[in-house]
Length: 362
Image (tube, rainbow, N blue to C red; front, side):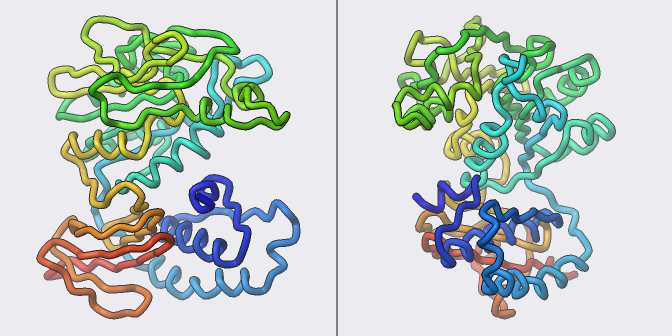
């Protein structure tokens, strides 16, 4: 539980937890070929020499991986962020916008525990080069509050090939929702309740981060209002023919999660941040014919020549390798035996494993 709470905040109460968080983030950096800032909010923690040493110990591997030529392989899922939209806060006159903290710091952290590797892009990248979307079977949109004509056209090109499009909280709320997503939203002002309940027959977990925040408050009152100030306007999908409602708000039965199955593609609208749970996301990716190599509770970050696995749960499973390759344990430097195109794994909570991949014949 401590580690799960630390995924977003980065809170490390002791050195063991710090080492665990560092391994998880370092694997993510190596796979993405980019970095994270470590910010010492207390002003004291980074004075500890062991923290410097633990970072320095990872530098030789980071330097070896940095010079490797990128391998032309990508995950089958991607999250597309609207950089401008995520800067909007619902306070100070933007009450219709859900808080970006809930979408990025919390919702995306949930997806990291899905057992599915995914890329992260900005919407501007795709508008400049729409071919970037090729190969992705599942695309998740976050912070896309405004869908103008160029964005509508881009979304239209994605609606084919068995692809799944997932629209997170308030997509299109500032314009273009119907045209871009095929859904229409309704609004209910504060203090609308955010508790979400799955429809009968739906096995996926359905939650709302705004409802979970109601279990505590800075005032010590279990009203959740201080948290709900981050998402003042509650959105729901307007119920229409052709939709399947997967979850509703307990307060009034308004649709909180809905799906549409179209010819050759499908879409989902998740009205509250957190509604795209790890289990739900993994199922969407798998059903779309995508790459979902690990069980829920294991974070997978990988490129074509590197795999990072971090376990938030005990997990014994066979990891399907994306192509014929030789596998090396990057900590020991030793070859790892495989069972054909599968890598047998037995992970305990807190384990981090890093593997190098080399395509057979290369």
